[in-house]
Length: 263
Length: 271
Image 1 (tube, rainbow over the protein chains, first blue to last red):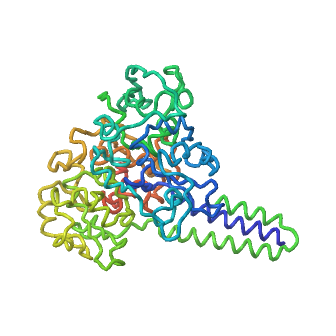
Image 2: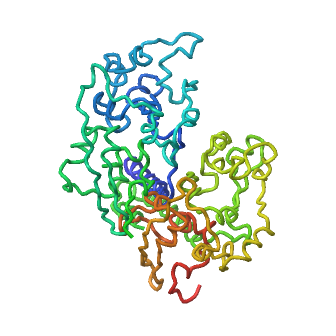
């Protein structure tokens, strides 16, 4: 009887949970604010070790470094938590520790000192749910940047072009010096939906930040036209959606890609 | 009632104490029946229509009352005659539900949300002396101003009793399409969808992309409210629309209300 009772109760729970979950459809999702956009929380081991999870701000880092430097040379995954960074890794100079070594950026050793929370380097990253006075304020930074309407509200591409920011793509001891590639021609991508304007993909705009390796050959094969992909997949976080959604300008800005008018 | 069916078939095969078992099954059936009855009761309950000049008026009280100020009053009609829905609900990121936007006073001062226009340049700013203009604590649409607007626009039966779609078509109003990119125009996506009704004798609804694209952006509805897979929007039923989902996100309280059955189901014989 007890077994049956448990089975029955779990069935009732299942029915009502199903009901509750089903209420999520047909509604608009909440959008992050400009300062929250691209900010991720990493909690592979922190909570288990009684530390606050790590908050990583893309805006602060991409204002100085290319995407390629961290996601190719240093080897960060493209999903929050997928890198499985450990404290030891960092102290060995991997991942965050490649720069956060006390030379390029604040290091990972500084133990908390009593009454001097400002000097406590731990909370500068392990800040989720903590009250931390950060050194850099997003909206102060944003004031001097060319603006865009979505994401961080910053036109990063223009900011780089007009030298408002200097994007470093090389880290001594980690990166190798490569030749600059000449920009290939723009790609004209035909949408599957015939009423939609064509997509102009610019390699030039991407290589400054991503090089070749960030996308090829894993996200996109290199044989032209050999890999059909759809907007559904992009919305689901694949292909362009790996970056354009969570970090690069979000994919709701239709006309920023669908630029070639066909009507 | 698939799930209830599963429960009773299990109940039939019950073992040790059939009496207790059947009582439990009965309880579950009653619970399910009660929830269904509640559903049925609410099924056709359209929200009551306010007077035309108050249709689309909302009060936002997320933090105001707790911070000792009056709730914010917002009138849709006074804004939509100047700006498309897209400007606020897509470019500025307002939620589609009163109180659903995590908006704070400092956000406004940082130029987000209301503060994008209410900065003292485009519209009155967020400074001393102007507080009461939004923090009214009550629905305060001006009847006189509304009538002045309504008199010059094509009429309709419900909501604001203004045919907003016709007003924009005939350029009697020219709401701004984008506050960021003046050159931007609606995409030429004119596909009309025929949505077959689930119920027998209910004629199909027609969905014109073109009419919506004048006010909205693709990204206002896709992919959150409607995914973009063809004929694959799950739960897309009248029941859920009436719960302010799908079309009901707008067409219950702001866009023309669904009392106007024929505007979507044009072949309906009577309303």
